[in-house]
Structure formats: C-alpha cells, structure tokens
Length: 252
Image (cartoon, rainbow, N blue to C red; front, side):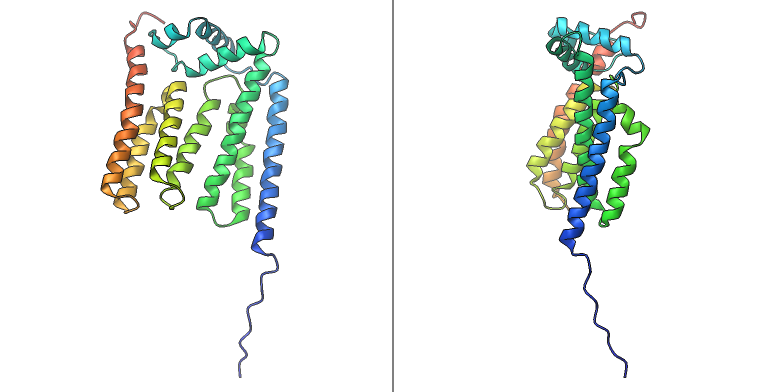
C-alpha cells in the first residue's frame, strides 16, 4: 500500500520571515539614507539649472503672494520655490543648501517606505518585495532625484501616496472618504510643485472608473469621489496653466 506522507511543517514560521523581511528593508532604507545624506553634505544638491532654481527660490520668498499670482512662462508652479525660499531664510546663507538636501532626502525615504507598503499589498513573495525595493532604492533615477535641488524630489512621495491610499479602500482596509481626502491633498501638493502632475487627474478618473466597473465601489461612490477630486485639482491646474498662457510669448 502507498503511504500518504504528511506535509512537513514549514521550517521558517511566517512571523520569523516577516521579521527578517522588515530587517532587510530597514537595512536598505538605512543604506539609502547614508548614501543620499552623504551626497547632500558634499555638494550633491547642486544639479542641472541650480543657479536658476536658487534665484527663483530667493525671489519667491521676497513676495510670496505676488509670486503665486503673477504670470510666468517656462516655469513650474510656485509651491516648491516658496518652500525652498523659506528654508533659505530659516537656515541662513551657509546651511540652506544642505537643509534643502536633507528635506529632499527625507521625502524620498518616505517615498521608498510607501513603495514598500504598496508592494505588501500587491506582491505575496517577501523575497520579490525586498528585491524590488532594493533595485528601486539604488537606481540613479531614484537616487539623483532624491537629493538634487529641483522640483522633482517632492513629486515622488505624493504620487506613491495616492497609489497606496487608492488601493486601501479597494481591499477594504480603509474608508473611501479617508482615501479620497489623502489622494486629493497629495495631488494638490504635487500640482503645486510641477506641471507634469496634470496627468494625475485623468489617471485618478480612469482608476475610479475601473473600480466601479469591477464593483469595488458603487456608482454613487465613484461619482462622488470623481467630483470631489476633480473639483479640487482641475481648478488648481487651470489656474497655473492660465498664469503661463496669460504671459505674452515674447516674455521669457
């Protein structure tokens, strides 16, 4: 007679694997922080168009209200320059550049952790999650934009935050209202920093439509979420676009 072999218990319990994964992720984040902070303290903040960004930040903090309302061409929305100008004043002429670099690094370390949280919602295999985070963390496309003085560093965290909180109500881990508030604020912040964030509105609308069609949300919930999100972000986008288009083409 054939014997039915009993399935041997897993030698590594789930809780142990989870701890090892967390330790590995903490190690990756620590390594990235060490690398990026070293760059911030040794001139890595100075990148392309550095002097233009510095002058714009100094100009923005002199008259913040006029900086927001005035028309401009070939320039992204004013929020990042306002924040950078405030840092320049608070940190002083000797330390402002390092201070901005540290702020950029902290934002993108938070973005890396958010990406890991997203992977826990989508990827079951812990080794694949660790590999994905490690690869992303040390890619030049991520490392450079985590330090350099430009409008790119503050845009990674809001987008990943939208992805993370957009998935939570689909998996019944958060209320739709909470996720909608967070996504709307994140998109508004990103739109205030860079024109490329204009694509967030149609992307969010497409995600909502798919969620309604797959019956994760009701039609009423989808409509309300779409109205709230677009009613907040699209006017903001149009405001900044109008400020660019209102300037004659012969003005640079």
